[in-house]
Length: 73
Image 1 (tube, rainbow, N blue to C red):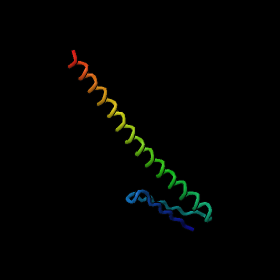
Image 2: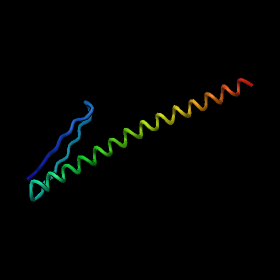
Image 3: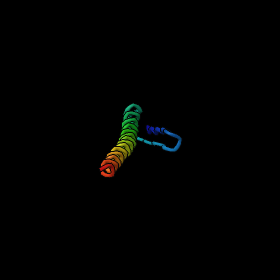
Image 4: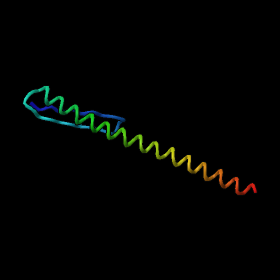
């Protein structure tokens, strides 16, 4: 048997995994593991993007406060 799982997320991201095995349960388990891996990778990518944008905001705020301290003297 062959199993194909399709997951649609956030209107534009689609995840697809398929697997074939001797039994339906084994094929399903394999496809579920593949989907989980894709979703984990996507989640890490989104979180990393969010972390980097927050880090940039902190750096920009620190630079602007340094500039205002220098101009106050």
